[in-house]
Structure formats: structure tokens, C-alpha cells
Amino acid sequence: MLSTGLPQGAVPKLERPGPLRERVYEALLELITTRALQPGQHLVESELAGHLGVSRQPVREALQRLNTEGWVDLRPAQGAFVHEPTEEEADQLLTVRTLLEAEAARLAAVHAGSPGVQALEELCAEGEKAVAADQVDRAVALNAAFHAKVMELAGNAVLAELAAQVDRRVRWYYTPVARQRGRQSWIEHRELITAIAGRDEQRAAHLMRAHTEHTRRSYHERNGT
Image (cartoon, rainbow, N blue to C red):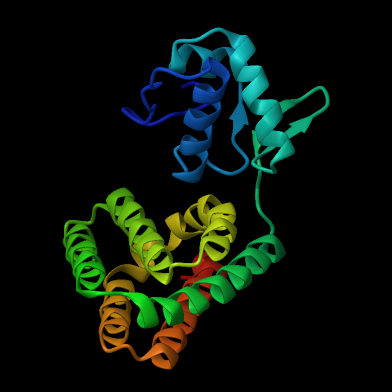
């Protein structure tokens, strides 16, 4: 078994055009955030290069960038490893996420029109189907899309920019608890849609705050369940 231990079909296609180093970086980041590459996993340049069909140079550059951004740890004489987030790191990020998304939900209740509400309902229906079919990766992707849509409906570019900075890491933390949160997460999404559609900004903010807090708590309890 390769040190990278990638599941069958996990390696994303390197999209063209664009600089090769950028495409390799995005491919590796996607593998990390979806946990195809697990926290603590040894990353061997030659094996990753083989998986992606590239030389070792762009892989090395991507690993250095990922190290700078906190996704990968470079250890002297040992090599590269996927970063293992501490409980404190996760807590701090998920707490910031709660602040950003509660405000986004409040603003969405102020600004969202019928097309926006309909888009949320469609995403929610797809998410419910994914949970029912136990399609965890799809449920995670749809969860991210739902929250991104709420952020878009908020209509605040600065808030959206800040949220985008934490979005990838939120997905990273959400993946291991997605099955545990399961159907309940989408029940909470339904309640949020009702508040947004009813233009009840305070209830929308309250529901989003409680929703993201449930995810934060689930993350910390994941090893005990």
C-alpha cells in the first residue's frame, strides 16, 4: 500500500488551463479537505507525483505552499505530513464561523427574494437525498453549497470574503462529523429557510448560531461517540 493511501477514484483531474503548480496545489488541497488524505498521513512527493501524473517539482512547490497555509507540516529528516488540527484550532475557527454565518443568515432574511429562497430549498432537498443514500461526500459538498448560498444572499461582499477564508477549513472539520450530524443538520437547514423566507432576521441569526454550534460540539465529541 502506498504511503499516501489514496482511495480508488479519489484523485481529482488536473484541470487545464492554468499554471501546473496551481493545479497541483488545488488537487492536493481538495484531497486534504475531503480527508482522502487523512490528518497525520505521510505525504511522499514521488507517490503524489505519480498519482497526479506530474513531476515532483510542482508537488514540492505545492507542499511548501500548503505548509505555509497550515495544511501540511514539513518535518526535518522526516518529510511532509498532513497537519493534525488541535482541538483549540478547530474551536477557534468554528467559533469565528458561527459569528460570520449568524450575521449572514440575518442579512439573508433582510435581502433574499423568492428565487434565493427557492435555491436554498433545492439545495436542502438534494442534501436530504444525499443523507438518505448515505452519500457522505455529496452531503458535505451540498452542506458547503447551502451555507455559501446563504452567504451570497446576505449581499455583503466583505462578509463573503471573510467567510471564504475559513470555508475550506470548515469543510475539513465538518467531514468527520457529517454522518453523525446527518438528517438533523438538514432539519435545521429547513427551519433556517423558513425564517429567511419569513424575513425574520433575529430568528434566522439565532437558528444559524445554534446550527453552527451543534456542528462545533459534534466535532469535539466525535471521538467519544
